Image (cartoon, rainbow, N blue to C red):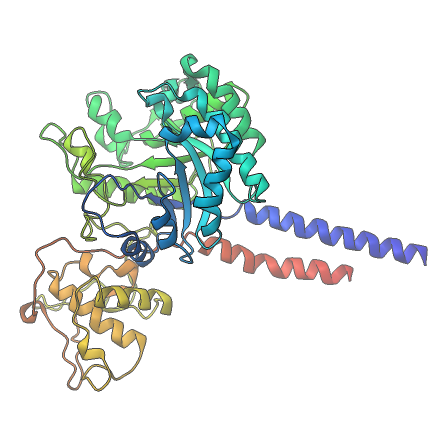
Length: 503
């Protein structure tokens, strides 16, 4: 009997260990994430509710805001979008001085909206080393108070606390292996890094290869900055080969961390991007270059490529920015980092899946011999994606969807694919029948066969009621969570077999 009880006890312990190991494995198999920064330094932006609709439409799952605006938090409630919120530099003194200030902020501005608003990170201060006011010394005390407040609320394991930095915290970044933090900031960096290591929080960095190229085009090639280089830059100390500046800058930070013996802190890129327009001297600030940089960045990240010094390591990034912001000071480029104009139309097409909006059906991406093309819904699209896209097309997309209402000529067949196809095509034709206008996050397919039937007539570009002269909106989708779903479904049979064996 004693042996039997011991066997059951051992088996139960092994079950628990197995489950814990599986959970730990999942935690490391989520895959890298791509988010977007939602700056609001503009006077012509859509309301937060409309922004939430736009973000969901494009299946953007991760969003960074720079404060804790209540209207924004309310707008993103129950959307599933993970939010990174911020404590502005102007609040650091109050947050560092008194715990009661932090507790009051959490009580009034955060806790009432959590977990409906899915807050996962709080950034305490932003690029404090670049701030004209000397607030660096306030960062760590404020971070500690925020963490204490979260611990009181039982959220310290669900919401991570960190602070964002510019690459200016490094005194050297090339070659990457010589990466080193500036001694000017040692007084606050050491306790900051200790805090991050103790609480498994990431080091948050804002990285802009655009600026490196703009300031030194004779030393930095445009292709190297855009992930397009066919040549390699060799780190003479390690022999590591670099084909893009982004990786070199990330590795410089990793080497700087290792030089201070902080080897377990992971890096998160909280801002990166490329402007689509600039002043006359900013010749590289174009829509094509912005699209190239961000497209290559997304592919690089979601493939979990890692960097030469950290191959295969996950790296979450946030693209700056959701909208062009007309109140930002400085050169013209500062007001043109957005993926969208304030009217919610796209500045350029960007596919968040990193795979391109290509359908492999026989008619996909083709046109008829006379150049006529139509846009229909992909049979591979999910109902949720089609419904979101249909709602957008009939709403913000300004498509007249009367024809797919009951008793109207295109209502039958009463299916989501049929209704979405009519709406997709109407939007496609109204906006110049371009590839971008049939994007719909990979859910739209260009065909050369007229999809009209019976009395339901699909428009062509010569028959539109209206032709928009504005920029078209490309509906992008992100599949950043698909990896984790696959990992879970693949791993559950193993766990169940493990449990059943011991039971």
